Length: 341
Image (cartoon, rainbow, N blue to C red; front, side):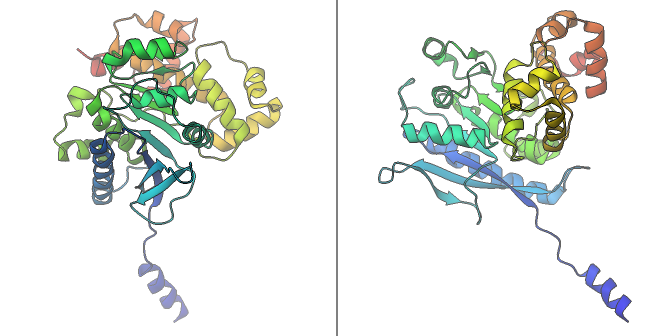
């Protein structure tokens, strides 16, 4: 009798609710409100689609919880004023700086705003911007030593103000692990699809694109998820090393150098890095470099030997093996499938 009761209890058990992924949209002075609300609609639609089609194999079910934040005049702090669900924490998984049609590029943001952006990123949030929103990321120092994009018309202003940023305005999206920047004013759609791809998977992303009548084939060449490193693991030393790796991936790397960047001994660094990221440091660095090589294979005609050198490999044959191991395709096959024609 007890056995029957237990079996019935298991059958009638309420399914666990998917885990939330908290995405904050920052409504800074001059932010384009259509992008703020458009991104919100896109993410909430993605939740309904993901619930209908189910999670991809091996991917835990999650849903996107959207919140809006602004700098309040009274307190001088960044505070939340809208959320699509309850229980939004102070630390986000991702924040987005939407485009602006009013704010003069290069105008210095409030100290509290810069501090909030830095604290969120240091806490593991993926930092994202669209169009002129990249100026706020750069002013907070989050793009130093990184590749980034903004609207092509803002190229000269941005380059003059932030020479330490590798500006790539010929690209619509520049994804650099824990930082994603998008180019034109309407590129919030492309950024939104990229975020859906990262957190809900490529199947959900393609369904969202179909629902909104957006052609991902013409605007996005990546139909497979890119390397999405774990950043919200709570280990500050490992996160510091991750940020350093994302900036310096093309340099010669040693375990000693990685451990030094984290301020840990080599043995402790290996153990904590594996635990926090799910990868050993070598595999993590390989995936970073493969991600950069994918971009060059898609968007350039550089020979693979040059691409290998660009991402930090002196031996193209060795990197070819790494690429095939990670992607399941040779570099030539990958280029034939995904290169922008």
